Image (cartoon, rainbow, N blue to C red):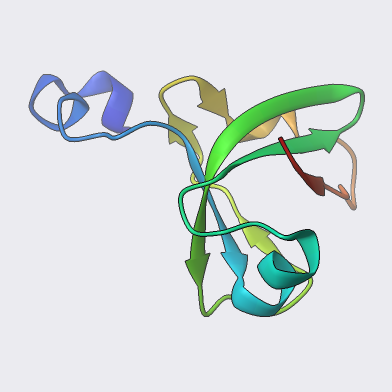
Length: 85
């Protein structure tokens, strides 16, 4: 609940999504590049953070300034598409 904490809110550097290095290379995305996340007719933009997350998956923290993960996650098996901005 970073957005609700005055002390933590100032530490937040903007919305990000963790993506695997192999997936990032395939998308031609570097660490810090802006990407577009799409799901359920919704598009959001976030900074790519290259990590050791499993290939084919992304991690979007739930409560980020300017990006609410729940807008992407509707239904039983949400599929999120990541593309270069």
